Image 1 (cartoon, rainbow, N blue to C red):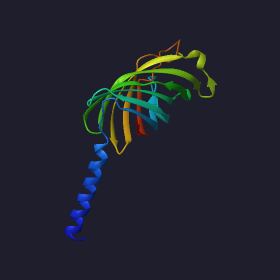
Image 2: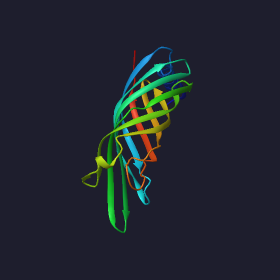
Image 3: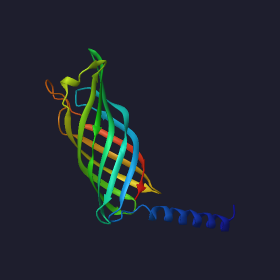
Image 4: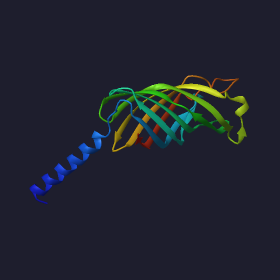
Length: 191
């Protein structure tokens, strides 16, 4: 490949990339909806717990407050899990929630956003191995999500850490999902 052809390809790629990122900025008064799918990587705070990967998906709506800030609210089906192996054997907890993250998004530059807020969660089901333990768990918990996302050509890659602030069981040893890392991909429809 000669040098002139290489320069032309680089110039075309730069123009395409510039066009794509020009659409990835926050606009005042703009509403967007973003269907989202991803993975939770979570564990409880019991001794010997191991991380478990599980599904998260839903939709997120964002409103542009200014060029630098946006507010968003989402509705997600969020699965959390944790497993432990000890002398007594192994156990696995599976919790399914409807999560509603309410976030403030800060855009320091085109496409890049830092996020923080609160995340109320409503318990749908809870199993410890094959036993239904929903009655032993809190129906409602409030968590704190923080994260970062990057948008390019309306595709948003989002990484979050969700800190559990409350125990999920009602009685006994206080189990929390203190550690939940979330990675997701969304396509943003702007209105």
